[in-house]
Amino acid sequence: MYMPSTRKLTLIFFSTLLVSLLSYVSFAYYPVPIAPEKAQVRGFRFPGSFDFLTTPQGASEINSTYNADSVTASYYLPGKCTDDIHFYYETILVDRGWMLNATEYLKGFAVKEYQKDGFYLQVQTTDASSEPSYYGQETPPEECLLNLVGGRD
Image 1 (tube, one colour):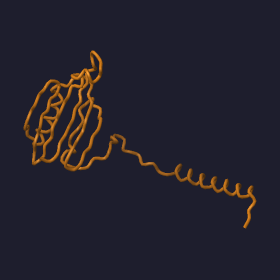
Image 2 (spheres, helix red, strand yellow):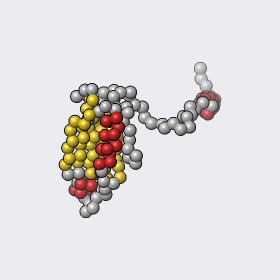
Image 3 (cartoon, helix red, strand yellow):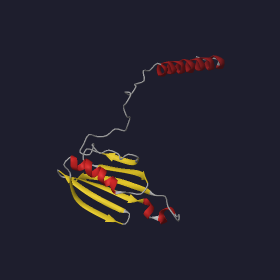
Image 4 (cartoon, one colour):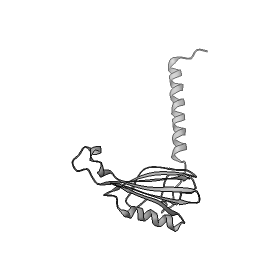
């Protein structure tokens, strides 16, 4: 059956208009879930052996991967790395029954390894400013990179 082109265009126009209107109405009146007032919205974490780890105050997360049996997290902290970072995690871990297994200090780099029930966790800090060739500047900015790496032994 032949249909004139103006009638066909009119039918397409009104069909598109009707679909658009229905889409708008369904989205405009859809109830938006509201988070509780004091809730902090964060990414999903698997419940597991490392879900108790927190971020030090003033740190910015670079990357993190939490699984049931492993963790890899990197943070940026302004300023030089200090023993306060290691003390922060040592307090958290020792309170939960973790034992300090090894400590290693090199120029601008520190690692402390903890163990508990067949799991290990390394707390690594690196002064990014200890590598001036990385920035190509005479006096690079003082930055601290924190890595948490853990899993099964």
